[in-house]
Amino acid sequence: MKALERTSRKIEHIDHTLQLSSKERAHHSFDDIQFVHQSLPNIDVDNVVIHTNVGELFLSSPIFINAMTGGGGERTISINRSLAKMAKKFNMAMAVGSQMAAIKDKNERATFEVVREENPSGIVISNLGSEATVAEAKEAVEMVNADALQIHLNVVQEIVMPEGDRHFSGALDRISEIVENLEVPVIVKEVGFGMSKETATKLANVGVNVIDVGGSGGTNFAKIENLRRDHALDLFNDWGIPTAAAICEVKTSQPFLSVIGTGGIRTGLDIAKAISLGCSAVGVAGLFLKDLHQNGSEGLESTVERLHYELKMVMTVLGIKKIDDLRKVPLIISGETFHWLKQRGIPTKNYAQRVYPH
Image (cartoon, rainbow, N blue to C red):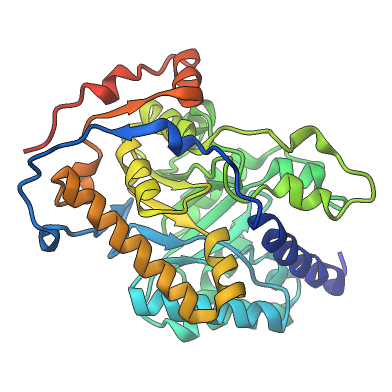
């Protein structure tokens, strides 16, 4: 693909993401999750701490800026610069967008390097697709002096993308080789269509210990790619595993994996629910991109402050001082998520009858 065509595609993805982000779903899978209220929490807001561990990474915040962009010239430099400044201010981890653009065209390296330049001591996560080789993975990590590498799985997006890939064989073997040969942790992430317990098991068997479920309910790349097609391919507009169900699928099948919940996170209550279902952290992308576009850096920072504040308020009401304990509180699962989990053989009573931590 020519460099100009790749750059143009990156910009189109941003514009279409912003276009779709204004159309919120009436129902989200986190609406099916309800905490069991505790009238005597016996803690103060100041007692709550929200640092967490994701695999080998220590994060000061359980919210990280998930992969968005890069490789699209000056506009993506500007976006990544603003995101990196925010990451530094709030001591949050940040994943860059797919770096294959910069591996193919060295002129695009600056669109990613700006993240490390703005946040020299923060946690930065590289990003490549499952087509990447070990050499490309090492180059991506070197490019931003990354603390981890995120490998994204985006088969549905590629299928719908007019110029997308049509060859997906050998991906698991390539991931295995990267895990074996890279000196930083490897995170495998689905791009908006959810991770199943079958996929999680395959990844765990080749040494992956961090999975980002990337469930449906957030940015829908099938719809984004359809906006770029002359004739829409609507087969996958409603495809995927909802985020709440995907978290349960991965964590119940592979309890020793660290799980990141991504896909439609909008409030501190969503974050608390995702963590309680089994996550160690959550990723946010579309919400941050929308706020940056509409309200600038100040609006974006206000949203980040709100999310942290809301999370601490929920934890206080539940009487929970630490992120780890949030995964022990009882909760009720209903609606579509209940039916999904029941059909998949995941007992929901285990969540409702958890022993409240003391």
